[in-house]
Amino acid sequence: MPATETSTAVTEGVRITVRSAHIPEQSLPLARRYVFSYTVRISNEGGEPIQLKSRHWIITDSMGKVEEVRGPGVVGHQPHLRPGEHFEYTSGCVLQTPRGEMRGTYQMHRPDGRLFDAVIAPFLLAMPHSMN
Image (cartoon, rainbow, N blue to C red; front, side, top):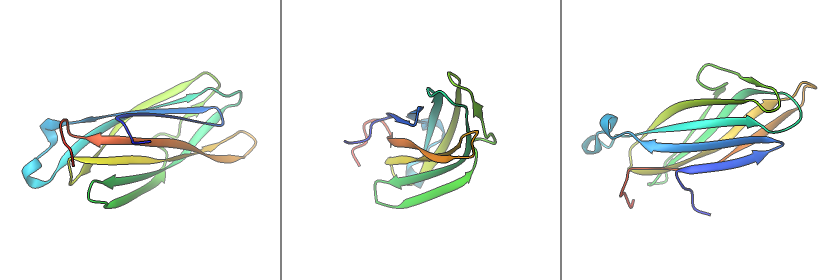
């Protein structure tokens, strides 16, 4: 299934929804600089608390260049979410092409010490009206 500007995935009761947008005022196409924002909403729809420990992003531009980003938490936070709670943040990335895709996982921690990877479904990073 091709990626769209919005994606949703549910893993073990954790729903991750992402929507992306092109930021034309920060982009410089002549310099091959295309800036995108993405807003992530992490919702705990399960019956147990969770904590986001780390992130792993895979960013691919339309030329096939892949960049992987790993690190603790998101935007300086390792949010704890009780059942029914959510956490939302916005971040961004820069590509050298007007189109690309992001996907990844968040490593989640349960109170009993169990870890699991919550899937971030692929989503498109696209300058409006770009075909490549």
